[in-house]
Image (tube, rainbow, N blue to C red; front, side):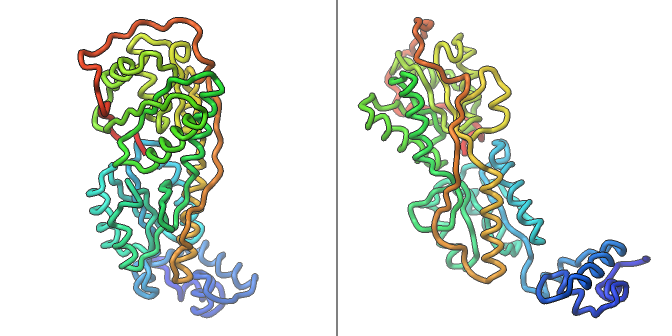
Length: 363
């Protein structure tokens, strides 16, 4: 058919009224199965597509979900977005994406941009949900939103895993393997409240076991070489036998740095990550980690948000915790029985807090 196909064209082909076509396509009213089949067949035959601008003006909705994540360099966020898109597509929504790079100021700018695009709701991963000034802004705007990965103290709509309990499971696995002198390597807590929650659970488990407290090593995101901070760690606690990294991307980077330092994994030191990204099973040794259901997180968060939008209400306040799984890997073994290679100590053994930079590896 020449020119743009309209609702009237679909109605003529389906032998029904324009109002009936609109009800079927918008799912806003009753229609018999036979009528629906005729309309859907006519749509397919004519190649009809909604004019989304006109549709939005008519409904006062953009049928668009705004998404803000810290980065796309970490596969967990790509998986979350795939889950969101799957739910959005089923409900006839599109998505608009922004990255904030673990920076609260960038979060403000990204959210302002998404609001200016007239999105119907937001799906967000914030640096710190309990300290974010954007939450008050969203409440004031009465815009539905759902947090993903954040686990706020306040009763806010969120979908995540229990970061603290998962980290306790990591601690138990390390303690069961005989590791008592360990360290937690993480992105700076100001950039990731998830990282801080994992640290809390990890240290509590060691305290309850009567084991020495894990050494905390916070890192930034703009450099890729961790050898300086690892050297400082080993000068501070030479008998460290295991590292728990706050996500898999950071764990993989640390493993590469340790090899460059002449260490063997896991014979010299064990490594555990967090996330369960696919590549962590393809390396040698395979990475022990906490597997999180990222695709399901995105899908559940988007479904809840769309339901709230369609029913003109806010999503239920409160955090939905999805199940996770601790996956043993070759990078975790019983405490080494042989001596490890001598490590060169830095001239300044006192380094508190220990720090080095790492670009976009932390959730």
